[in-house]
Length: 337
Image (cartoon, rainbow, N blue to C red):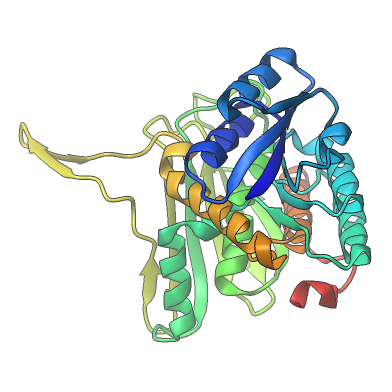
């Protein structure tokens, strides 16, 4: 049994506590930490009797009964917890982003490599979604030729007034950044952002929608429509156009209804519904692989690549030009193991 400590008991943290407690085999939540009393009490209640409560993440990490830690705090707080958990040689699941700056990501990578242990898995759950996995398998079959273009949409019904233009990259497009890199197996080299006509449902600090353009080393062009006030639903799409055909990601299976001379089907309204199974799959895989001490999902290096790509897109939002994406170092051999 893997004894897990969860750091961060906000909405996402509590969702993971419930998942680990109710739907994950081979794991249990034995400790939770949060600086907010109300949140940590809610987290502990979900974990059940015997769950320890901490205000300080460091104390949770060094609890000898905690085998592994879940980091589900805001991104700016990740680095300290990650470094502490690496020093304690604890297995780590960290929700995205790895860190909020590329420099902090490199510091975490250096610490993990120095430890000699593969400890960190990053929470890019789309890699565990059935639809994306089917697209990847089709690409790798080579039945459709080499990928030439990828078309994506990331539409959300609405966001609050605290959501600003850079968040369209860091909080939204970050998922496409990772999953497309994984699908085509090619690094990004440039980024650009285009701004269509602004929707009336946006506000002064948010330009919405946006079209984000990425190019890979081999020349694959990626366009990602990010529209976070689309009103009609949480609409995620991906099509890979290849030399001999195209591969379009399937949508979740919902019935089609015919009534009053109309045909309709359901569109999800949030990520927790759309990617419910993917969240469960990634956490179960992380637990299953613990006994072998391996990380089978996104690594700290994947988190770093996502961070520098996101930084380039944010810079492109400001300059309205094409920005280069270039890692500060070569991928360590450690992450090829």
